Length: 160
Image (tube, rainbow, N blue to C red):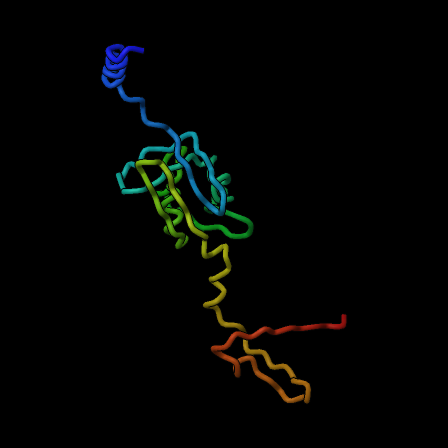
């Protein structure tokens, strides 16, 4: 190709209209990469808000929208009406409600979601175990409250 022809082709290519923006997005969650074919526009124009199709929610984080809220296994989270708009669901607002870390590169259409504390079981660390009393090897009573503030492994066994 002659230099003159190359410059002509290059000049014509620079005058061509830009390709339309992609309609989809990529979500990174739980060591998975989920490609979404379509995302919704953010009506509030909040930076980084991701509106996904309700039908894509189980693929992203295994939650399913039900009348009682977003449910996964035996956990259901009530959803305010502001998180749902037509066929779309505000995944970013839901993540913030759960205390989940969210990082977004809106320009690249990539959202990364951290671990859900509720599903990790960390919510149990703030609960108080009931005070139980068990005999030690010599038959003296030992109270669980004697170990408050320390990590305790309580092993039980029953013969029945």
